[in-house]
Each structure stands twice: as structure tokens, then as C-alpha cells.
Image (tube, rainbow, N blue to C red):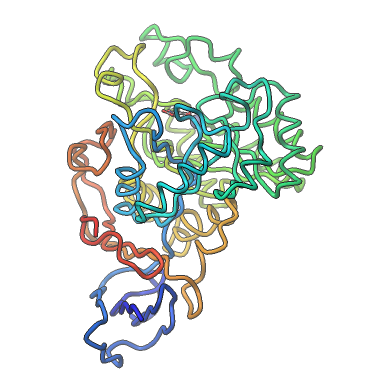
Length: 432
Ligand code: DOR
Ligand code: ZN
């Protein structure tokens, strides 16, 4: 029997410290500290001063394998995830070849299992080749070994309302969810940044808030009509929060995520001209960011998802207009959430567990993630040092790419250890 003893952690940062005993991947005991004389073979984690939470679940990770292994592989991305406190990630379908069939999703799923640092659940594409025209074989991907339950054309919007309607209708039979990258393409032709004064001054074509909001409104109505589940990726505007509130009040089955970068960063970053800040949807205004933080605290936004998007140097160290959108996120997500939500008192640690673990696991239909910290539950866990700080260095992150927008920033909240089914996958910043 493989055993692990976590000594002196505070569950959800509440109450007195406890010892948590894990055997064969399952929590078997939670009790007063010190009583347990650990047998020789037991691995012990001294967690004094640390907060124990269920392992994080990322609904939105770009792992780039197959196709762009020069920027990230399932192995390097899994390491970044484990170091970031994650025990499961959903790997987006915009790979090359696209994950629009059972062969590709099974490959990603198998490779994730071989690496074994984090559960890798492939997202299936909604349409063939992400072209937005013909539905991919959702049923075959759902029935495959990968058991796909989340479908998305992320990177692209499923813009045609009839295709979106059919996808939503079809998803109900599969108990699946359609995750939409909400961007009306007719409104973002040539867009480089948030449409506003700053972009105008720099001469960039704008990406108006309404390009996101109009698709979210349309999709909520389509989801209501179909009785289907819709998930909105990377919400970036205050107007989208209004639409989501409206839909949720009326019982529409819609969930939504916000990225760490949209919580912390704003279009002020445009002044740097540094394409590391180029992302899709773009960084918005401080008023938008403030609304997103309040909506995450209040539950209109369900969860945090990273949109971890590694890019090669040649696609980032170039002029803004030529650069690809996206930024790294897995190893910095917790710290940005601590900075923007925990320190200002918008979320406590139970709230962090809700938005980074429990809700994402529910949305993705993962039965063994985001579970309560009680005996009998799978030991998918993260230990956080809440008071420690660290300085972000892109070159030191586990990702192959190094496009972090937080370079040189000092951030609070350090992942002390990550545990996947009782096995320590990361400890003190090192992969195990
Ligand atoms: O910034 C982004 N990068 N947004 C997306 O929707 C796609 C992603 C990527 O794949 O690079
Ligand atoms: Zn997207």
C-alpha cells in the first residue's frame, strides 16, 4: 500500500491544522495532527502554514501537441500544470492536425496518461478542421477512449448560428457542453487590440466589446432553445457579464470562465508595444477588469481558466500586428488569483477551491476532480503557501515557450506541492 501523510495543513485555510493520510490514491483519514506515527514507507509532506485545496482543474489549456512541439508538448505542458497546482487540464483542439476525430483525441489522452503528471482530457473540435462549416463527429469522440465531453473550436468562433444550433442540439444526447470562443468575426476583421482610445491612438483596428457580447447573447438564446449546455470561454467585457446574468436568471444552462490575465491586466499594456501582451480576446479596460473580478466573486462567472497559449519567439518577438495572440498561464494562475481576488478580500480559500477546482470539474464532467477533502475521496490535491511570494521568470517556467506577461513581477501565493491520486507530482517548484 502506497501511503502519503500530509502534516499540519489547514483545509481551505480554515480551522486548526490537521493531518491528512492518503493510501492507494484515496484520502483515508483527516484528523488532529501528530497522532499518526508514520510507518517507514510513508512519504511525509510537512505542510505547516500551508493551505490544502482540491487540485486545480483548467478548462482551457493549449498544449500544442500534435503539430507545434517547438512551443509546448503534452509532457512540458503537463509539467507546467503540475507546478501550477493542477491535477487535470482540458487540452484545446486547435492542434495540427486538429482534434476533430477519435484518432487525435485518443492520441492526446494516451500521451497524457503516459506522462502521468496531470489528467489530460482532450477537448474535441465542434467543426471539421475548425472551419465552422460541418459538424465534427462529436459522438465518435465522446464514445472514444478519451470520453470527450467538452467540444470547442477555440481560437475560432462557431460563427454560423445554424451550425452552433446543431452542435448544441447534438451535445444534449452526449451529456456534453459546447465551449464557445465568442468573437463575431465580421466585427473583428483586422482587429489588433481592444477597440477604444488607446488602440485608436496607435492606429490599430479595434476588437469591440460587442463582438463578444453579441455572440454570447445569441448563444444563450440558442442554448435555451435547445435545452443545451453552453460554456463561454475567456469572458473579457462587462457587457458579457450583464448578458450572462440575464441568462442565468432565466435558467439558461450557461457557465463561463475568466482568465487570470483579464482579471489583472488591462489595455494600458498596449503602451509597451510588446506583443507578449497581445491576446484574444484582447486586454480590456480597468472598468471591465473590475467588473470581471466582482462577477467571479459573485458567481456570475463560474471559474478561472488559463487559456495557456505558448508561442514561439519568432511569433512574439516581432511587430505587434504580425504577432500571434496568446500568453502562458498555467504556472502563474494561482498567484494572479491570489493577487486580484484573495488579497483584496473578494475570495477566501474556499472560494479559490470553487473557482479553480470544483466548478471547472463540474463543467467538464470530471467525477474524480474538485472533490471535498474528506475520507473516501480521490487524493487530487494542492498545497499552497499563502504568504510566500516569488518572482516570475519566463526562462525558468516549465513550458518550452516563455511568453509570460508577468516577467519580473513579484506575485503572492506559491504552490508547495501537487498530488495526483496520492502521488506527489510537484514539490517546491520541482517535478517529481
Ligand atoms: O490568445 C489566444 N490564443 N486566444 C485564443 O483563442 C487562442 C489562443 C491560441 O491558440 O494561441
Ligand atoms: Zn479562445
